[in-house]
Structure formats: C-alpha cells, structure tokens
Image 1 (cartoon, helix red, strand yellow):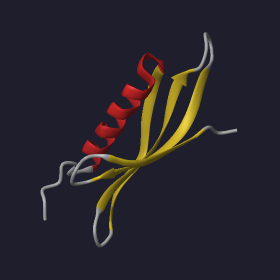
Image 2 (cartoon, rainbow, N blue to C red):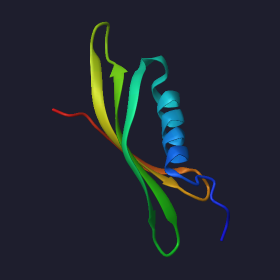
Image 3 (cartoon, rainbow, N blue to C red):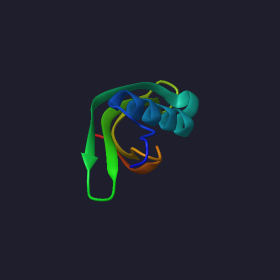
Image 4 (tube, rainbow, N blue to C red):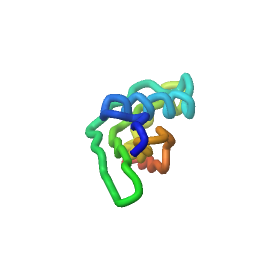
Length: 87
C-alpha cells in the first residue's frame, strides 16, 4: 500500500485550512474544527473533517458556515466538500 500523504487528523485539518484560505482569502476570519476521522473502504481511505468558519460578508457583517470535507489519505487531494449556512 502507498504511503499516506495525510497521515493524521492534524494534517487533514491543515489541508482544509489551506483550501479555505485559498477560497476566501482576506474574508476568512476564523476556522474551528469539530472532528476529524479516517474512514476506509475496499479501495480508498478518506479523512473526513467537520467544522465551522466565519467570513466577512460586508462592511460590518460576518457569516458563519458549517463545512465537511473529504480528503484522500494517500494523494492528499480533496475529494468533496459541503458548506451549509445556518438559518
């Protein structure tokens, strides 16, 4: 089996933080992680990372969103993500 590029939950969270910083840039104000866990199937191992982010959404307004990312443990590539704005 190939060596894992994302070996632990801290590395998975760092990969998600880099992705969010690239996506939102200066508008990203805070990122917090709730949990990270490794899931395995026959062909693939994925890190799943959940948390919340706060981003600037205007002059005085901030928006809070929940997110979930899936990262391939071997390649380090983001397989999928979902962001939800609470009502």
